[in-house]
Amino acid sequence: MDDWAEVVRKAIEDDPEQPDRALLSRMLDEAMALNDGQSVAARHRHEAAEIRAATSELVAVTEVGKRLRDAVERVGPIARRVAADVKEKAERLRDLEARRAPSNEIADLRQEMADAMASMRAVVLTAHKERWSAEPLSTHLPAYLAAKTIALKDSKHLSAAKPKIELFIRTVGDKPVRDYERADFETFRNLLDQTPKGWKARFKTENLATAVAANAKLSRPLAPMEPKTVDDGYLTHVKNCFGWLDTARKIERNPGVGVVSARTDPQQRPDEGRFPFTPPALSAYLAYAAKKRSRATPDYWMPLLALYTGARLNELCQIEPGRIVEREGAWLIDLLTIYDRQELERLPETERLKLKSASARREIPVHDDLVAAGFLDFVQSRRGRRGRLFPTLKADQFGYYSSAISKRLNLDIARAEAKAGRVSFYSLRHNFRAALTNASVPDRTADRVMGHVIQGAQAHYGSPHLEAAEILAVRRIAFPGVDITPYLSRGR
Image 1 (cartoon, helix red, strand yellow):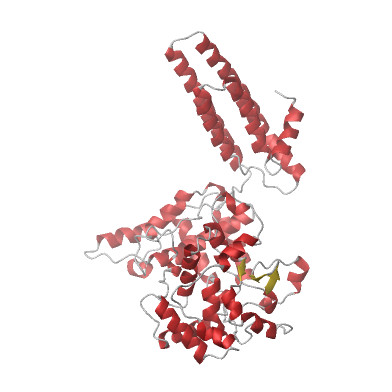
Image 2: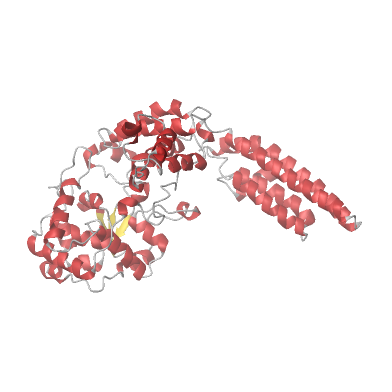
């Protein structure tokens, strides 16, 4: 094996972000090379991969020097032990096979190797946890609520956060935050899925399990809460808290990510549980809006913008003229909000773009039909003015600009006789998503443009800016059977 200093240098070169992972990988690979080609080597390479995965985020400090020292101190001894142990056992195995030893001796040695790898994996997992906070969740709760108070002020979400997190603590226990696992969130979720609405008042208890048991004893048990209530009224508050702990580097990762009501469609959030417009209904709505609403008002532009961008209504309400930008011949709506710190600090809070999540910070191509309808001309007429593209829209007490206009837009849908079942203004977002699918736009591009969370490792790679091919793909979408000529005639 190479000199230790050279091994460390090579590990940094192979994986600058996580040198401990590259270090452990190198040590294991060298040891395993002694028995390459043997079936046992293949099996233990799989075990080694599990160890590498367990240590994938051991190094998270910003300074490279501190990160390296931390890696060497924690993983170095483990790597040496793994390498020496596997090397010794691999040599013994090779000797046994060369001597054609009894099969039970070979099997016993292979089991020893498997046990050694399992033991090392447990050591790595323990070492991995030690860097995270051992303080219980209740200790972190005041700081989290203080941070949320600054960020949300009078938000409707703030007052509900504390009791829901305290309920989570009572349900699964007040543990060191680093010890919470996905199973804890699933336990909480499973009880909520059985709990009826108004359970506290009905059963006079603060305990979910007690309420569930009492409800089950009724001759006619009450129906459980809606999945939307479980997800948005309970789980979201707890997951947001753990998201804050993750950002504050108190825990390795948010264990609640992806946990929703078992009755929630995994492909669709409850608040997006709407049907798209049919082509005739959509044509009727667009014709009504183009005819009845002034071209200078947001009520005129919002239907067409929502259809061709898939943006959420509150996002469209906040657009400023300066966010309609041209790049390499293509027009985009820029929701990335990449400001330098000084610029951000100069902006009044009312002028800072409020988006649903970090993934909502994105770029959206301006479709050619929007250009033909005169949208860029409308934007140009607003340039040079301070404020938003639609300055008549005002924020409500919680900072949402869409509250009032959403009611007007949905009334217009009804007046146009385009209302049917679970159709609302939000349905335009579903029409847009369907158009992306029909145009064979890749899922990753579709998720980026719609502001969805991108799952897996691919979320960490690439530029936040759309590539030319992605822009072109989105601009190719179409809505067969939908008549937009009322907008085109007014856009000339």
